Image 1 (cartoon, rainbow, N blue to C red):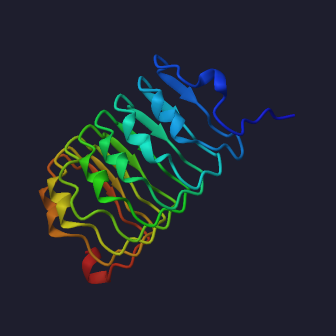
Image 2 (spheres, rainbow, N blue to C red):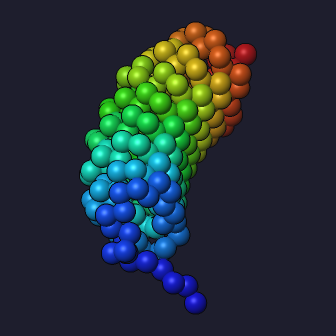
Length: 195
């Protein structure tokens, strides 16, 4: 018998010194803006909760370093996501995301961004703020192109764009001096582009 939460328990509300909160796999958990009052949170898991949206005030969690919201039904992200200046890891795999807000390009501390298994058709045009990004996983989406601003991601070491709809890579990829591995299998490159 599962003991699944429907909402944030009252006993947790207002715990301003709480740093780690795992609310993963609760079924149909509803996460309200109350979570933004937990201003000391550094690690938050909302995986597997059938969430259709993150709280609009998620950007108030200024100390948050890890946000996991995999295996939900997220269709979009709040603009305030770009206010998470301390965020190092953002995991949003297996959702229904079609795009990211432009503010996602403001995540200056972000090291790892996992966006696989969504329905993303594009990425924000300006990603120059992601100066710390080392790992980007975007496999199994509907991406037709990679923004030219990728040339500014000087810390990127690994990119996974498997099984998208890419027909070419921007020349800016050649400027990525830290890049060690890129996987673009299963795209729509012509044989001329693959050589």
